[in-house]
Length: 59
Image (cartoon, rainbow, N blue to C red; front, side):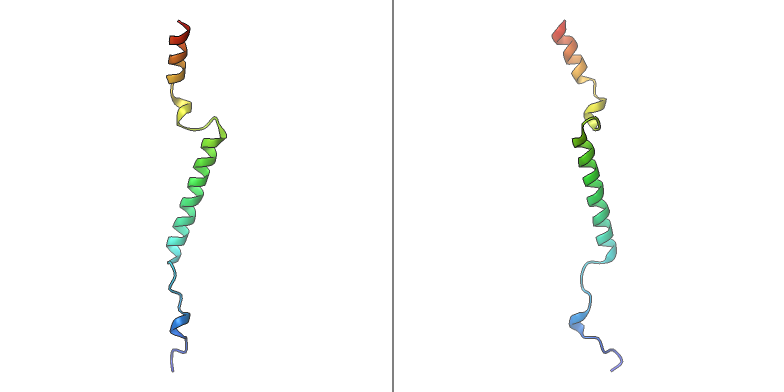
C-alpha cells in the first residue's frame, strides 16, 4: 500500500536527454538547410572553380 501508483501509468517514454538532443539536432539541421538555400552561404562560396573555368572559356 505504500506505492499507490498504477504500473500502467508509469512514464516509459524516451528519456528527457534524448528528446533535448533530438530537438537541438533538428534545429541545427534546419539552420544549415536554410543557410544553404539562402544563397551566399555554403561551401561553394569559397571555391575558385567557377572563376578558373570562366578564364579558360574567355581565353
